[in-house]
Length: 81
Image 1 (tube, one colour):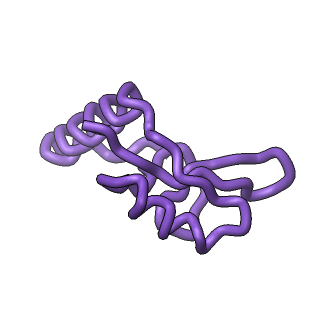
Image 2 (cartoon, one colour; image 1 turned 90 degrees about the horizontal axis):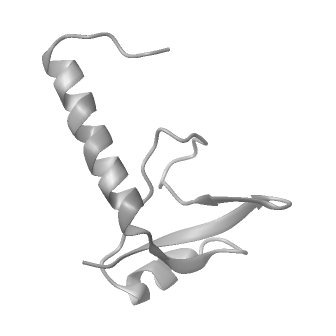
């Protein structure tokens, strides 16, 4: 299933996926949309925002990341700092 995200230039030549927060980091999954139209609508909040198809390998990565994170919480393993 194709998912769409919003990619924007946060600073000169520094691009990132919109994660729906005010935080910058690689440990926060991006907001994903089911249709390009939804992503395009959300992209309007950014001057440089554009709706792009989100790579399936990244969807798989975040799904696995969340599974591992949930298991660490269940096993009462403290988060890495």
